[in-house]
Amino acid sequence: MNIFIKKRYIKSIGYLINISFVRLEKFNIMQLKKIEGKLKELLPDEVYEHTIKVKDYSYKLSKAYNFDSEKLALTAILHDCGKIYNEGEIISKAEDVGILITEIMFEDPIELLHAEISGYLAETMFNVKDKDIIHAIKTHSFGADEMGFLNKLLFVADKMNNDYDFEEYQIEEIEHLIFIDKNLDKAILKLFNILLKSLIKKDRFIHSQIVNSRNKILLSIKYENKI
Ligand SMILES: [Fe+2]
Ligand SMILES: [Fe+2]
Image (cartoon, rainbow, N blue to C red; front, side, top):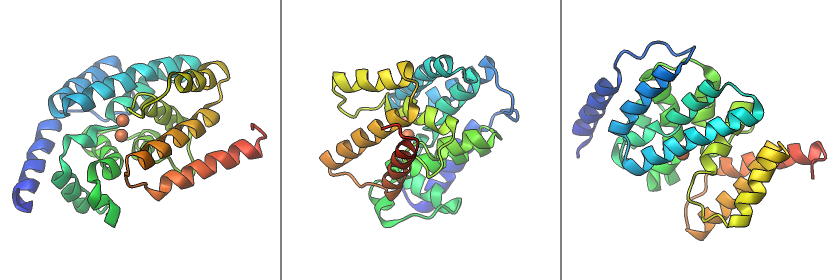
């Protein structure tokens, strides 16, 4: 597909999505269902199924941490919406919106660009104006130097519902940290370790922010004498 056709195609997807989503500062179940229905049409089946698992897990987290369940569910529903695009389209979209595309991003564009694009689409197509939600979505793949509570909850919900060849004992250990110890930072550290091992095992490219984010979490745990 040449670049002109790609751009026209992306524009048509944009038109399809941009259907009267009101400014989302307050959320409700109906708005969540409407977005969910639209994503079911647009996302590849396996991404949609993953999205629903992340949303369902988000309710467990909201209950455990007494967090706004609709806010976390909306963040979860939209976190991978950038995966409506294929490789060529996501590069084209990233160029259009001025995202710096590094050499490795051309090698694995969907994995390395979808979080930024998902945040962009959440804001521009789904009209979400809550900055915490947009930040959490944009940083869900690699973490961030400063991870707020919503970032941490989305990161955990996403990684616990990904295919990282978890051993049974690892799931139990991490869920104990999340739901019994209520120690999200330690759970995130373990998830970064599993993520890194999985990327190395599969000879995948590793974004430097993953290493930076892991170091920051490790520092904060050590600083607070949590290990
Ligand atoms: Fe993702
Ligand atoms: Fe995801």
